[in-house]
Image (cartoon, rainbow, N blue to C red; front, side, top):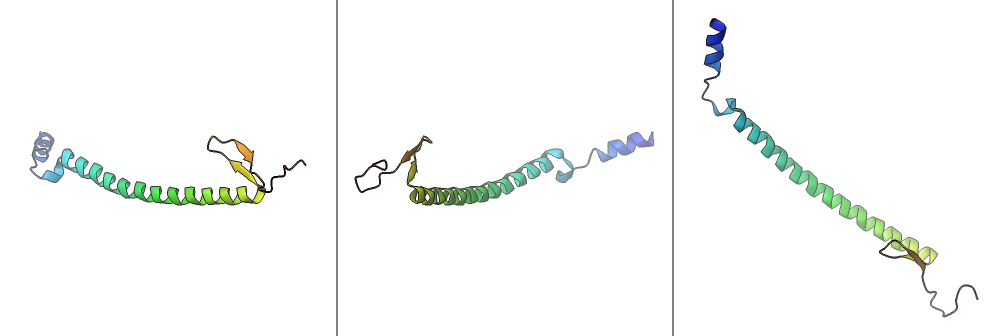
Length: 87
């Protein structure tokens, strides 16, 4: 009988921290704030990687005279002297 009385007494706490709704909200809100900063940092790093990859691709294109188009196809850049490479 005393176990039932203790269980009933512990469930009638009036503290806001004892309720799962308040604690659950704070945990989810905290995770949201943390994820905001994580995604913002990830976006910044991915932008740097993308710019570096584009610069590297442009340097490679200049070195071997090919151009990669937006659809992924590769073409030969004109040599600029009016003479085709096979002649």
